[in-house]
Image (cartoon, rainbow, N blue to C red; front, side, top):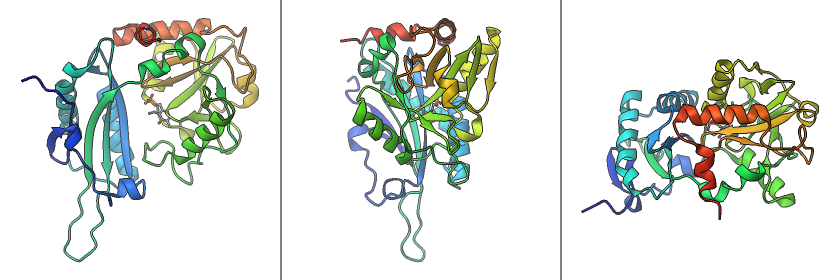
Length: 304
Ligand code: PLP
């Protein structure tokens, strides 16, 4: 009989999603003591899986967490989970593919062993929820809460502690439920949003915040590589609000969004206000070519 329900990998076993439970005292739940990574599929194939797994293992190292298996095994298991779940995708759908490693349940008596929790799961991307942004762009607002400085906790580790970014989003949604938060760093330069990196374009040059201040987005790097191959000058540097307000174009990158244009930052429209701008549009086209499908059309197919 065909599989009716998605499966996940949890601590050594592949089980139906509804049977996968995490203990109530798991450190990932009670302390946010965990890391994760999230890739996506295009036509059912995971994009840049090895880069995501390498980032996951860097996050693990930062938190002194042992995933208990090699990177190759993590890739194999992820591939197996995805392959078993792909037949359950609807038309024009793709998956978000996530691995999580938590410190598990703390041992409370001598001789008791604690085991890390390892989870691999996939769920459909929120294509319908976000489709309209490929017509209008994603308006950005900068909340009062700054991104946590690297000396407190490095934003380069993808941990279960997203509260800083969540607070930013909550604040922004109070004034515009459709806008996304773009957090500034301690010095007032652009940092990142919950799940996305930011780019500006000015006089044909593409710029994005320095790596020390943000997550090393896999899409961010892909865009820097695409810019190099299209001979579009690109740089990583401090970008302040003056730069953002006077930019010709602004866009966000993330695994799920790929590249999505931004029509305004704090109400200020970049360039002539048309989205996407010409450089963003070139990069979006090149991104679709790279992944072998028109990801914008995939989003727009879900417009209601
Ligand atoms: N910044 C943060 C805080 C994120 O959580 C993400 C999402 O993973 C990104 C940026 C974008 O990274 P990627 O392109 O790898 O999805």
